[in-house]
Image (cartoon, rainbow, N blue to C red; front, side):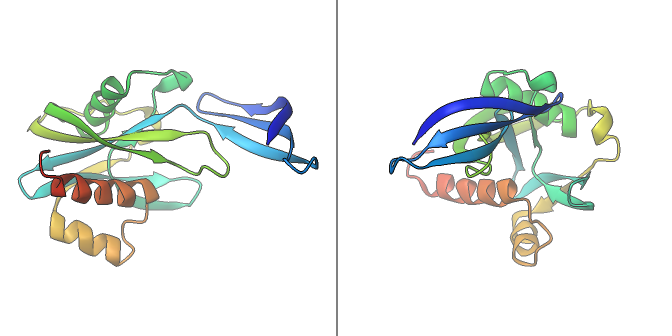
Length: 179
């Protein structure tokens, strides 16, 4: 597949949307609508047998949802992944990590978005005050046992795809001989 041309159709502080005209391998033409967002970091704060989740209102869905702390830098800025992870953890939970280990990579929605995310495991945690953005004012945090998190996933209380996939990455990472 080859891109013939591209045009930006929308832009704001968090994303751009572009339309690409393409030529397929059989010679036929087509279009792709692509949402470009900066890469994000997702952090799993782990203390003993508990993880900390954040709950917030997700406007596009119109509902509140539990998920792991995650996000991008303001104004579509690109930050080094570990720096972004530490920033998101501190911003959303107030926690600082003595150890921050990258355990995986996720593609958000590769059929329509260029955004990718790095998953980090945060341990050796120190508590502090959150530094939330205006959109996160109603966010709350809570610690959950891992059994409870798995129950929440199984029962549809946690439906954020990135959080579910990140938890699976955590389970796989823990099974590796030397993590």
